[in-house]
Length: 271
Figure 1 (cartoon, rainbow, N blue to C red):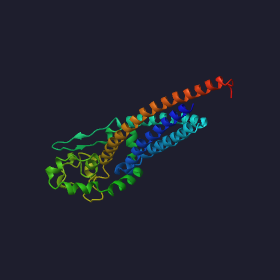
Figure 2 (cartoon, rainbow, N blue to C red; figure 1 turned 90 degrees about the horizontal axis):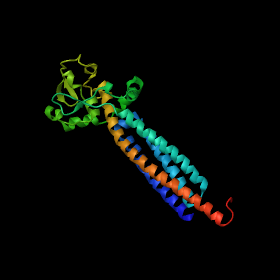
Figure 3 (cartoon, rainbow, N blue to C red; figure 1 turned 180 degrees about the vertical axis):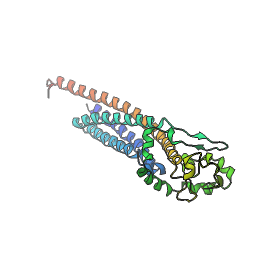
Figure 4 (cartoon, one colour; figure 1 turned 45 degrees about the vertical axis):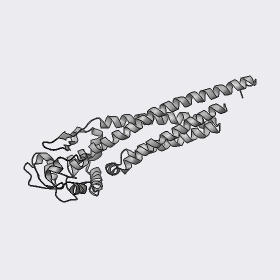
């Protein structure tokens, strides 16, 4: 019995370690400028990671100190958390499966269209109330100013692989036909009717294209890229947790079997 309890404790220690990549993924998302402005995914990920840690600690204590109630709490709670983690992994995959950039003539960077993305994501940015807050957060960042420091010549900028967020928010859509002065200053639009975003562009450095649908699309493209990376971490952790949980269930069952066998040998199987 002591050996089985030690095994259960060791298994739960591994489960404690598996909470670290989940919490780390949530913290990483929270430190990304776009995610910190939107605040959608990082807190559910962090909360699930912390709960996995707390439950694993309970199982660890229950295993080494032979507290059956804690082990039962671990088995039930961890199963619920594994199901929640699976739901989160599937949800992230489903909302990020749609949407991609479109090539523009003579440009290395891509253009982004808001209609390409899932309805759930679009609803997070389409209302004026939500977008006003997000826009203020994005405009206070240095992402557009960094382009001016990196690209002085038009051709250098056109050949640059800038982020979706920079492509959507820091410059006008290519189809508008603006003339390049620097990455965040453009003049003489040729076709203002090509897209409503053509009229939204402003050379005011606090405005730029932050009110454009292309900026919203670029934000969603950036979010999708980061969420997919986090989803890979969550998926790997999910598979590892299932393995640890199943091993823990087997060890717990063996421990109970050993205890029952020992009581039968002592002639007292019910106490």
